[in-house]
Length: 227
Image (tube, rainbow, N blue to C red; front, side):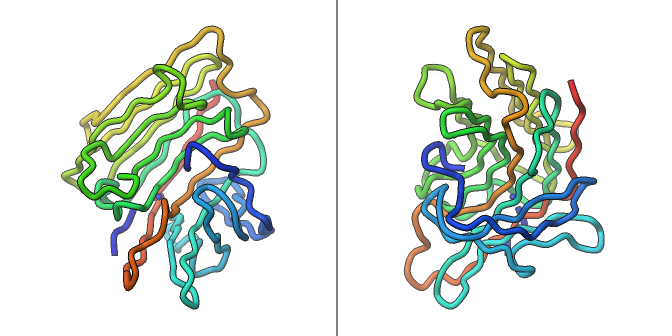
């Protein structure tokens, strides 16, 4: 099992929004359920798919339930606003299956979104397995794709949002693996108060027939510092 955990298009709202919540890092997170985007997936809010362990670490899994693959996602019901979002991840984000996507992101709508994503988009030979994204992603200079490779099983990823600018960083130990800053004085990016913070693990397409490997992400910690 690999311990690790948004498509740029498609609605993130499921058909049915689960009412289950989990307490993690001092916040109460809603757990997604039902069917819908990203990726036209099924989402499970079961205890076996999303839970917080005795050490206070958040676990999200992709699981096969009665022959159907279910993904997992948590999100905050309220805005945190401008500031620094820091995610601590246990596991190698470079070891995800090719069509698995791990997302750490601020979401308002499909056209207003700030993402850190780890995936090969279904291509096992793809070198660029990570990206920082400002939606709409098709605009020039709104996406920074890069290869990420880890040597240890822990990493930290940062979104620092300050209105018309966002600074992204990915860190392993004392080493900065990648950093990128987006700035556009004419673009508010997100409307503060309407965005919500999400963490998810989902499938881009489906596993090949016969695949039995589940995937799991472990977020060991999260901190938010207001701007």
